[in-house]
Image (cartoon, rainbow over all chains, first blue to last red; front, top):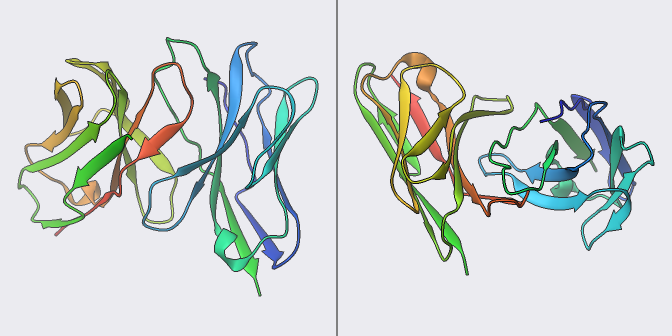
Length: 112
Length: 112
Protein backbone atom coordinates (compact mmCIF):
# COMPACT_ATOMS: atom_id res chain seq x y z
CA UNK A 1 0.00 0.00 0.00
CA UNK A 2 1.24 3.46 -0.82
CA UNK A 3 2.28 5.59 2.14
CA UNK A 4 0.24 8.72 2.75
CA UNK A 5 1.10 12.02 4.42
CA UNK A 6 -1.52 14.42 5.79
CA UNK A 7 -1.39 17.48 8.04
CA UNK A 8 -1.78 16.52 11.67
CA UNK A 9 -4.43 19.14 12.37
CA UNK A 10 -6.41 21.96 10.78
CA UNK A 11 -8.71 24.66 12.12
CA UNK A 12 -11.60 26.31 10.38
CA UNK A 13 -14.76 28.29 11.07
CA UNK A 14 -18.36 27.56 10.37
CA UNK A 15 -19.39 28.30 6.81
CA UNK A 16 -15.90 28.11 5.37
CA UNK A 17 -14.65 25.64 2.78
CA UNK A 18 -12.00 23.26 4.07
CA UNK A 19 -9.41 21.56 1.89
CA UNK A 20 -7.34 18.71 3.29
CA UNK A 21 -4.47 17.54 1.13
CA UNK A 22 -2.93 14.08 1.21
CA UNK A 23 0.41 13.22 -0.40
CA UNK A 24 0.92 9.75 -1.85
CA UNK A 25 4.03 9.91 -4.02
CA UNK A 26 4.29 6.15 -4.46
CA UNK A 27 0.75 5.55 -5.64
CA UNK A 28 0.48 2.60 -8.01
CA UNK A 29 -1.39 2.49 -11.28
CA UNK A 30 -4.29 0.46 -9.93
CA UNK A 31 -4.57 2.27 -6.57
CA UNK A 32 -7.72 4.12 -5.58
CA UNK A 33 -7.83 7.04 -3.14
CA UNK A 34 -10.34 6.78 -0.32
CA UNK A 35 -11.26 9.18 2.48
CA UNK A 36 -12.86 8.35 5.81
CA UNK A 37 -14.28 10.48 8.63
CA UNK A 38 -14.13 9.51 12.29
CA UNK A 39 -15.98 11.06 15.21
CA UNK A 40 -14.86 10.46 18.79
CA UNK A 41 -15.73 7.01 20.13
CA UNK A 42 -17.02 5.84 16.76
CA UNK A 43 -15.58 3.84 13.91
CA UNK A 44 -14.50 5.62 10.71
CA UNK A 45 -17.08 6.22 8.05
CA UNK A 46 -16.44 6.17 4.31
CA UNK A 47 -16.77 9.62 2.71
CA UNK A 48 -15.57 9.47 -0.86
CA UNK A 49 -13.37 7.55 -3.28
CA UNK A 50 -11.70 8.45 -6.54
CA UNK A 51 -9.15 7.38 -9.11
CA UNK A 52 -8.44 10.54 -11.09
CA UNK A 53 -9.76 14.08 -11.81
CA UNK A 54 -12.70 15.08 -9.65
CA UNK A 55 -15.36 13.19 -7.76
CA UNK A 56 -18.28 14.83 -5.96
CA UNK A 57 -21.00 13.45 -3.74
CA UNK A 58 -23.48 14.92 -1.30
CA UNK A 59 -20.83 15.23 1.41
CA UNK A 60 -17.56 16.25 -0.23
CA UNK A 61 -15.48 16.62 -3.35
CA UNK A 62 -12.22 14.88 -4.11
CA UNK A 63 -9.69 16.49 -6.42
CA UNK A 64 -6.93 14.36 -7.90
CA UNK A 65 -4.31 15.92 -10.21
CA UNK A 66 -3.10 14.19 -13.33
CA UNK A 67 0.03 12.75 -11.69
CA UNK A 68 -2.11 11.34 -8.82
CA UNK A 69 0.68 11.94 -6.31
CA UNK A 70 -1.66 13.89 -4.09
CA UNK A 71 -5.34 14.38 -3.52
CA UNK A 72 -7.47 17.04 -1.84
CA UNK A 73 -10.64 16.44 0.11
CA UNK A 74 -12.89 19.50 -0.04
CA UNK A 75 -15.65 20.06 2.49
CA UNK A 76 -17.96 22.91 1.47
CA UNK A 77 -19.32 25.26 4.13
CA UNK A 78 -18.32 23.27 7.18
CA UNK A 79 -20.35 23.22 10.36
CA UNK A 80 -19.45 22.35 13.94
CA UNK A 81 -20.56 18.78 13.26
CA UNK A 82 -17.75 18.37 10.73
CA UNK A 83 -15.23 18.42 13.56
CA UNK A 84 -13.63 15.00 13.23
CA UNK A 85 -10.53 13.12 12.14
CA UNK A 86 -10.17 12.62 8.39
CA UNK A 87 -8.12 9.76 6.97
CA UNK A 88 -6.70 9.35 3.49
CA UNK A 89 -6.08 5.79 2.27
CA UNK A 90 -4.49 4.61 -0.93
CA UNK A 91 -4.80 1.06 -2.15
CA UNK A 92 -5.72 -1.26 -4.95
CA UNK A 93 -9.30 -2.18 -5.68
CA UNK A 94 -8.42 -5.58 -7.04
CA UNK A 95 -9.48 -8.91 -5.65
CA UNK A 96 -6.22 -9.27 -3.76
CA UNK A 97 -6.80 -6.14 -1.72
CA UNK A 98 -6.96 -7.38 1.86
CA UNK A 99 -4.85 -5.15 4.05
CA UNK A 100 -6.47 -1.85 5.00
CA UNK A 101 -4.13 0.53 6.81
CA UNK A 102 -5.05 3.93 8.20
CA UNK A 103 -2.50 6.66 8.86
CA UNK A 104 -2.65 9.19 11.69
CA UNK A 105 -5.28 11.29 9.94
CA UNK A 106 -6.00 15.01 10.09
CA UNK A 107 -7.82 16.42 13.10
CA UNK A 108 -10.21 19.06 11.79
CA UNK A 109 -11.63 21.47 14.36
CA UNK A 110 -14.44 23.75 13.26
CA UNK A 111 -14.94 26.83 15.42
CA UNK A 112 -18.14 28.89 15.81
CA UNK B 1 -28.75 -5.02 4.25
CA UNK B 2 -25.41 -5.70 5.84
CA UNK B 3 -24.80 -5.08 9.52
CA UNK B 4 -21.89 -5.57 11.86
CA UNK B 5 -22.21 -6.37 15.53
CA UNK B 6 -19.43 -5.87 18.03
CA UNK B 7 -19.64 -6.44 21.74
CA UNK B 8 -19.31 -5.53 24.51
CA UNK B 9 -19.36 -1.74 24.20
CA UNK B 10 -17.24 -1.22 27.31
CA UNK B 11 -15.07 -3.55 29.33
CA UNK B 12 -12.93 -3.15 32.42
CA UNK B 13 -10.51 -5.99 33.02
CA UNK B 14 -7.70 -6.54 35.52
CA UNK B 15 -4.13 -7.01 34.38
CA UNK B 16 -3.42 -10.65 33.66
CA UNK B 17 -7.00 -11.59 32.89
CA UNK B 18 -8.08 -13.11 29.57
CA UNK B 19 -9.92 -11.23 26.83
CA UNK B 20 -12.42 -12.22 24.19
CA UNK B 21 -14.05 -9.70 21.88
CA UNK B 22 -16.46 -10.91 19.26
CA UNK B 23 -17.55 -9.43 15.99
CA UNK B 24 -20.16 -10.79 13.60
CA UNK B 25 -21.32 -9.60 10.21
CA UNK B 26 -24.72 -10.21 8.69
CA UNK B 27 -26.00 -9.92 5.14
CA UNK B 28 -22.82 -10.69 3.24
CA UNK B 29 -20.61 -13.66 2.44
CA UNK B 30 -16.84 -14.10 2.52
CA UNK B 31 -16.10 -10.59 3.77
CA UNK B 32 -12.64 -9.29 4.61
CA UNK B 33 -12.56 -8.80 8.38
CA UNK B 34 -10.38 -6.48 10.46
CA UNK B 35 -9.46 -5.70 14.05
CA UNK B 36 -8.07 -2.27 14.90
CA UNK B 37 -7.00 -0.61 18.11
CA UNK B 38 -6.99 3.09 18.78
CA UNK B 39 -5.20 4.61 21.75
CA UNK B 40 -6.49 7.91 23.10
CA UNK B 41 -5.83 10.71 20.63
CA UNK B 42 -4.07 8.42 18.17
CA UNK B 43 -4.75 6.91 14.78
CA UNK B 44 -6.05 3.43 14.04
CA UNK B 45 -3.58 0.60 14.38
CA UNK B 46 -4.34 -2.46 12.29
CA UNK B 47 -3.98 -5.55 14.48
CA UNK B 48 -5.29 -8.42 12.38
CA UNK B 49 -7.12 -8.99 9.15
CA UNK B 50 -8.65 -12.02 7.50
CA UNK B 51 -9.60 -12.75 3.91
CA UNK B 52 -11.20 -16.12 4.66
CA UNK B 53 -12.07 -18.70 7.30
CA UNK B 54 -8.99 -19.69 9.24
CA UNK B 55 -6.82 -17.14 7.40
CA UNK B 56 -5.41 -14.57 9.79
CA UNK B 57 -2.73 -11.99 9.04
CA UNK B 58 -1.09 -10.38 12.04
CA UNK B 59 0.26 -6.87 11.78
CA UNK B 60 1.55 -6.29 15.28
CA UNK B 61 3.38 -8.96 17.33
CA UNK B 62 1.98 -8.79 20.84
CA UNK B 63 -0.05 -10.77 23.33
CA UNK B 64 -3.20 -10.60 21.23
CA UNK B 65 -4.50 -13.20 18.80
CA UNK B 66 -7.39 -13.44 16.39
CA UNK B 67 -9.48 -16.25 15.02
CA UNK B 68 -12.13 -16.64 12.37
CA UNK B 69 -14.04 -19.81 13.19
CA UNK B 70 -16.89 -18.99 10.83
CA UNK B 71 -17.19 -16.96 7.65
CA UNK B 72 -18.75 -13.95 9.34
CA UNK B 73 -17.29 -14.22 12.83
CA UNK B 74 -14.05 -12.63 13.97
CA UNK B 75 -12.72 -12.98 17.51
CA UNK B 76 -9.95 -11.06 19.23
CA UNK B 77 -8.37 -12.76 22.23
CA UNK B 78 -5.68 -12.48 24.83
CA UNK B 79 -4.57 -14.94 27.47
CA UNK B 80 -3.19 -12.27 29.79
CA UNK B 81 -3.99 -8.58 29.40
CA UNK B 82 -1.40 -5.87 29.90
CA UNK B 83 -2.03 -2.27 30.92
CA UNK B 84 -0.89 -1.25 27.44
CA UNK B 85 -3.77 -3.22 25.92
CA UNK B 86 -6.18 -0.50 27.00
CA UNK B 87 -7.80 1.27 24.10
CA UNK B 88 -10.69 1.46 21.70
CA UNK B 89 -11.05 -1.73 19.66
CA UNK B 90 -12.85 -1.65 16.36
CA UNK B 91 -13.97 -4.45 14.09
CA UNK B 92 -14.58 -3.79 10.42
CA UNK B 93 -15.57 -5.61 7.25
CA UNK B 94 -15.52 -4.96 3.55
CA UNK B 95 -16.27 -6.69 0.30
CA UNK B 96 -13.11 -8.19 -1.20
CA UNK B 97 -11.85 -5.96 -3.97
CA UNK B 98 -13.67 -2.89 -2.68
CA UNK B 99 -12.12 -0.08 -0.68
CA UNK B 100 -15.13 0.91 1.41
CA UNK B 101 -15.02 -0.62 4.87
CA UNK B 102 -17.79 -0.69 7.47
CA UNK B 103 -17.01 -0.45 11.15
CA UNK B 104 -18.66 -1.71 14.29
CA UNK B 105 -19.44 0.54 17.23
CA UNK B 106 -16.25 -0.39 19.02
CA UNK B 107 -15.28 -1.71 22.45
CA UNK B 108 -13.70 0.57 25.00
CA UNK B 109 -11.30 -1.65 26.95
CA UNK B 110 -9.71 -0.44 30.16
CA UNK B 111 -7.13 -2.67 31.78
CA UNK B 112 -6.67 -1.88 35.46
